[in-house]
Length: 134
Image (tube, rainbow, N blue to C red; front, side, top):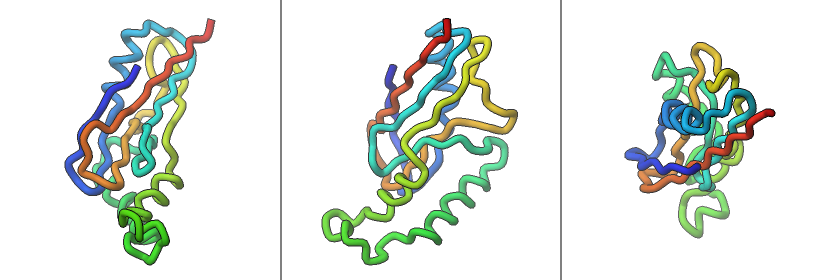
């Protein structure tokens, strides 16, 4: 199943755990794995802390310090977003989470997050693939 999200900022982290859990509940898969994948080259999917929102800011600050925008990247001559591509490639487009008792087996403080790196954007497509273990 797929769903879309609209982002509102140039860079932000959005918790998508509830949406993925809704899809998982509808699937009725008891045990298996769930793969979550974003179909864009300037966004990423990560698992991160969900309690303190400052970790989201810290992550973006660390990425921007390590890979600043407009740092003379060759791709910037095309559309000025090479930094977003580099950050997304380092974070990765997807995560795979175990399923146990029809629930994502995430840790207490873990959430699935969409990382927007070149927003705001409409219709960021996220694919959710559930493989049930028989």
